[in-house]
Length: 407
Image (tube, rainbow, N blue to C red; front, side, top):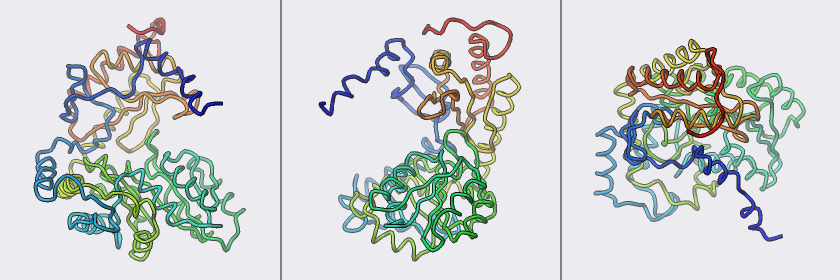
C-alpha cells in the first residue's frame, strides 16, 4: 500500500468542517490579550495560555524589537557552535536565580526541551517512568530514549501507590527518571509532588517536573509546582516553556550545574538545533522581570480562575477542580462538544474544544483558561454565554436539548 493512502482516506476533519463545527487552526488577526480579533470581529479569548497577559505588554514588545535591532532576526547556528549570544546567558542566569536552581539551559521550544532532556539524560538500560496522562512532549522524549535502548514504563495517572508498585518491579541498581507534568495541561490538576519525591527517594530515582503550566501560575511569586509545595530543593529537574507566562517562544531546563553541563554536551536536540532567536529571549527576559516586579499578576490570575470555577459550578456545569489557570468544563459527547464550541464562538467567546484522542471517550470538554488581565465584565460575559448555550443544549436548566446541528 502507498504510504500516502491513509492521508487520502482521512476525512473526519473535512466532515466536521462541512458542518461548520471545526474548532482548530482558527486564525487570530489581532491579539490584545483577553480580547482578540477573529474573522473581523472581537472575541473574548478564554482559551489562551497567555496566563499573565504579557504578550501585548509594551515592555515585552519593545524588548523584542530592540533585540532585533541589535542582534538581527536569528542566531544562524546552534547553541553549541555559533548560536549563543549574551542574551541566552543572561536569561539562563536570571531564570536559575528566580527558580532556585544552580543552573538553567535554554532550548528553542518547550516541546524540544522535553525531548532533549529526557533522551539526552536517560540511556541504554536506564528507565523513564512516566504518568499515563503526561503531555505528548514527555511521551515523545521517552519514546526517543527508548529508541536508543532505554526502557519506558508508565504508572496510573497521579497515583503514587501505583508509581511505587511500578518502581518496586524495576531493578534496584538501575538508574531511573520519574517524569511528570506539574500542572496537567488538560485538567489543570496538580501532581502529588511531595508524595512522589518520597517514593522516588525510596527507590533511588530522580524526579523531573514539566512545569509548562505551573511557572508564572502557582508557587511563591509564580515559581511553579515545586515552590507551591515547598520542595524546590528536593525536585531534581524542572523544565518549562516561554510560550505561556513568558509571552514568547522557547524552553528551559533547570537543575544542578553538573547535570546542565552534561546536557549541554550530550543532548542532540540542543546540539543540532538552531538556538532561540534574540527577540524570543529578550521578550522572555522582559516578561520574567515584569513577573518579579508585579507578583500580584499571579494573584489576579488565580482569582480570575477561581471566580470561573465557582461560576461554572453554580450554573450546574461539571468541572475539573484545581488551583491553576485551567478550568475544564465537561461536556462528554464529542458531537455535542463541537456544537457547544461553535455556539460559544458565535456568541463571541473562544475556548478550546478537547475531544478524543486528546481526552478519554466520555470526557470531551471545553477547556477554558484565564489571564491576569481578564476584566470582571469579560468573565461575567463568558459565564452568561455558557449559561445560554448550556441551557440550549440541555446540559443545565430544565429545557430539552436542541438538535445537534450547526446554526
